Image 1 (cartoon, rainbow, N blue to C red):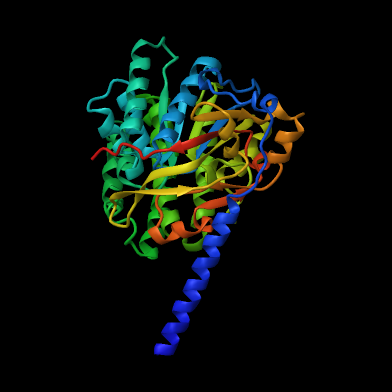
Image 2: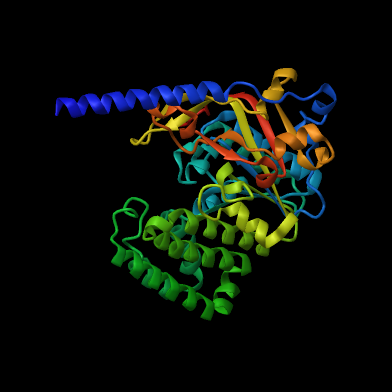
Length: 421
């Protein structure tokens, strides 16, 4: 046993030494562009404008827990509102929870902090996202009829807020159906969604499909009372209950299934809109146009559906301090560093970040060399274990920027979000 322990310790030491060597080597060398080439870097996000043919702009973030990424989603959205007439903000958050935020920005009760907390993820309970919700509320208070902004969620991992909106509509328009399914769905809650066995989840899917059929049969009756919009959103809440149940029972297909349903949600938002530009936001791994994680991601599905009508913007930072979520649900600040040819250009630039539209440098050989070569960009989801910081293999992902994005916003450094309890 002692010999075995010594062998394990020796192998661990070898691994850590190798990992540290790889990390150090990865930061050496690289390509630096000329001053003329760096002139393509844009630092005023307020002038960002999507091409006329674009229907959906996606903004990724390499970490959910960084303040600058949450602030940047607000700045990009504001630019698109001003320059492209964009009126729909869609986040990688709960569909029903997003409706709570949408109610708030249209004059609903409560506070912005309470509203964004309904999105279902602790990473969104931040001062930065609450400030965006308050800005949207102020905008809507002055907006002309039909020019108001909307805040939606494209995820489907929760039950409670979807049930609440669904039954608020059915209580008025189809009370018998509402009472029947309140009982049927009583065990489907946010608190127990991961403890239900597969038989219960499969039954929930069957029940949700039956409700969807019943609602379709009563569409004219429900619409007469609640209106077309409320019927459509209530029906999509019922669909989200089906998707959440399917997702919880999915096992190894979880990521592929989730991104597939998020893509369907985005397409649904397009179908419900008036043709104006839609803005979506999530992790780089969802927003990117190629599937680099072994499953077909949201961005790849939207690219297949809309072609160049989908415009994807990625993010990266040379130094990342972020709120890493622990298993307990709390947060601790973690820090990682990662040098690549994209953030290396900041060594010769003033300011904290730059935006590069790849179409602007299509004829520049220096930029094309960088954009068409593999770059390891930071890839942090909700959290990271302390020991994983020893090697970039645990917190970076190799992408070819031109294959994954249409543009990138690259930061010198980012800092932790302001978490609101």
